[in-house]
Amino acid sequence: MQHCKRKSFEKIILETDSLTIKNILTRQWKILWEYAEKIEEIQKIITRKQVNIKHIFREANSLEDYLANLVIEQAGTIQAYNFYDLSSRGRKIINLD
Image (cartoon, rainbow, N blue to C red; front, top):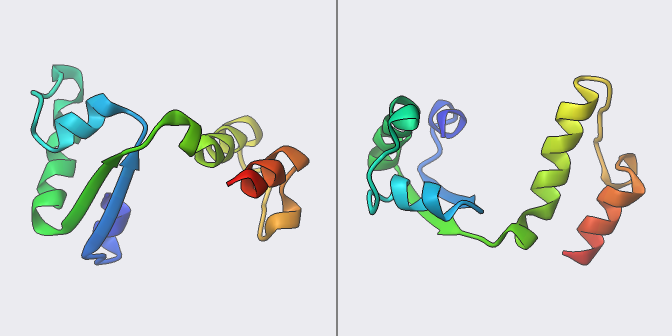
């Protein structure tokens, strides 16, 4: 959300595989105290932008999970600029999508 704010994006679709996070961000549930500061910061941005928050099932999030894990595992040692720069596992996930 901070990146969207810096780039002045106005219409944002925020997808999360955490129903808890979705419900907290949409103010349907109370904030867990340990996340309060970050959540409130995100909620402030949301009130100033057109944000559509969607819950997606974990299976639909496999490419994002793969890329996030890749960044953590290979911390700065890999760069992928196109489909063929990804491992066969990454290409398979994209092809299944």
